[in-house]
Length: 325
Image (cartoon, rainbow, N blue to C red; front, top):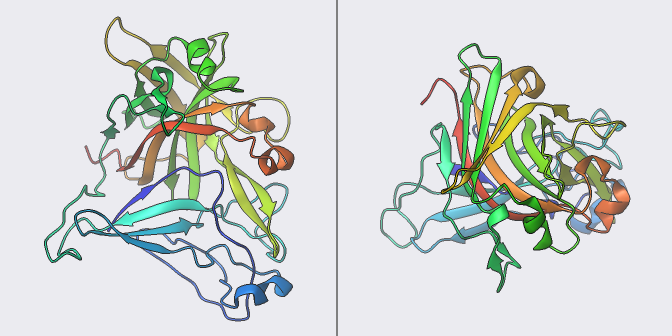
């Protein structure tokens, strides 16, 4: 099975707990820590952990390959100042919606199936013209049209170079005008190393003065009938206040006369967990987002009202290890 991850603002899972507990794991890293409620609505009274709940969906694609969709909550994210040391009414682990697809062997139609390998590579390309807004019946928005995503590690191991190509990064005012209510455009590259989610991003406004930053992903916890857990993953900018946890990085945007623009972010490895040439960065994806407010300004009220960044396009996903070209 190869693994890819899609971005999500809501995990779709339900919280709760149960006297019956189990630890579920997959390779290469756990998909969930701590207990899992098996008592249905009976979990409400005990306010335990139903992050995984019943949200395993098994499907078959057009070739007969099996596809399994699940919440990867191994990231242990929780909204500060809470911690994961006590899980009663608040449970750790943001639901990163993950798809595992069969990429070899006999399929369910009786024929062999194939698919991309999850072996580490340096990048991934995406087709042009698919940044649609609205999604149904909309037009391609060139200012959000992701064309490729790539990572590389400097020879001295101090800089992780994050590169994203997009159809047009030179006219943010035009891009924002296509999405009602949007005040900034964000290009976010996200990956998981170990059990931590990291990101590197560029944010631009109509003033066309992009900022570049990186750090650990953060979350906002929302509550259901039984308990609370991280429903919204955020990628905060640098700034004042405890929720602006991003670290400023250097970067550039280059737009040739013809062809796609190139966004480059030079991330200090110390700011994203100090990966080395042998570190595995899993499920690397690059996404274009239209947002009404900065991500560092997101709080429980904005998350509850669904005032969260809207994904327009993306390219997902590949595993990266600098020692494997």
